[in-house]
Image (cartoon, rainbow, N blue to C red; front, top):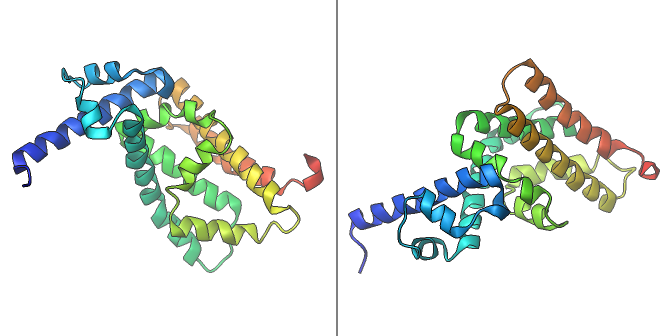
Length: 215
């Protein structure tokens, strides 16, 4: 028997409050320093089993946060990547990475929840090699994968394993730089922020294009 609509609505609101509370706390302290009890308290939940009921535990809540925000990010940038794929003239690394950077900056400027989530991911950016990449790759959609595949063919002088290693390193650097900028300034508005964001795709392109023997 299904639960009445009013009960399902209350459950959905409780779930959202837990996610929102976790985002806010993670933004201030990072993913690793926030306890389950702190999340429950911030969400106004007296029942300590609420988090386990909705998410199966703390890790399940974190996975739900990733799903909510990384899927949101993938959806937002998808239309821009589609336009990139459909244009007649060739595109370059700066174009694709620029879409990534600007999508993050735009969502951080219009969605306080996304802003809080993004400020909290520093712990994940510094996680063990492979863990963070697996998380991000899980939310890549077909246009993103196609765009990357097209770009790979333009780097014939760099072995693919090295190219992949450089891409992962550059992606971590860009995300950490953006997190640090947000923590210092709180936004991506103004000329200084615009110049900062414009430099990031250039850095990625320079890293990928460096001769193999340069590293």
